[in-house]
Image (tube, rainbow, N blue to C red):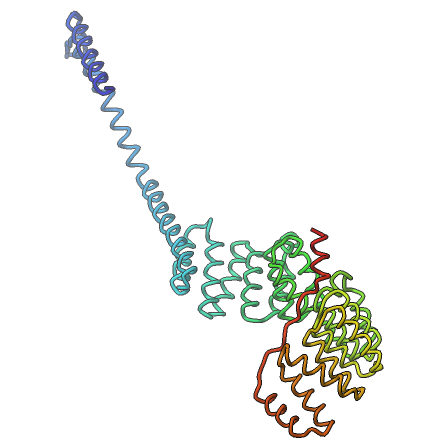
Length: 408
């Protein structure tokens, strides 16, 4: 509809102009001695309009000709930019697909676009790491930091690559050069946690682990396993130093000390440091809150404690937790130490009925050997040698369940 109206307007304008020129009888005389040229007004107007149009078109053609080199440069720059953007996209996809050689090649093409040159150099370094071209990787990282100004990003990438190479010290060296603001970011904290674990700097690892837990950036089971490993290694490092063991034990929060397997590591550490009273006290507090087969075994192996005292304490645990296989086996061994052969055999056989572990068979075989029943002992020795079983897992205490339900 609009183009029909446009045609009508043009036709109306043409008719109006024709009617106007029809009634224009004037003329124009141009004198250029000895010449004279006469024109009608209509012809003069048409010639003037044609002159203006030709001048306009001529000037426009000259401007286009003059701007041709610049437009050519702009066109070439646009083509380079489009190619660089396409190369950057292809490099990203190739890196995700594991085609590292293609990714590095495309990153080199992507450098033609200055805005993405730094990001392209990071991708190229990652691709070289995948190719195990370590010298080229370090060159890309250095270029990213020095030429493109992405120093912290280059340090994070260097730390990540060092962690993948299992070099915790190199990763920590890179992370320690980060700016404080970037060092507190989640990614930097995760890298630091992994680097500290590789470097076995367990004391420095615990605060970083706590920060990530507060931000909920670690799975709960992974954080618990790593914390347990850290405390176990810290207790192992104390050796037989009782003062260091006590100092380390005081650093553990009370709600964490007895409710997790860290307590078992503490019992073993105090046993090595010859503080058997403290080891027994920790084991007793653990068994008041939850059942732990490891704590029971460690307590039963505290040879410096009086056997009757151990027997009394463990019988209290038996009343609390019921006939657990590990507890019955430990009671059998303690009764054997006291030469209470009947009770020891009863406990060991009841334990075997619940969990036929090779260690329990061996304990019962030794007991039978001491009571001069060599035939039965030999059979149990053979059965224990043929049986291969993983250690039994401890169950969670009902006290813990009720406490957690009350907390909810």
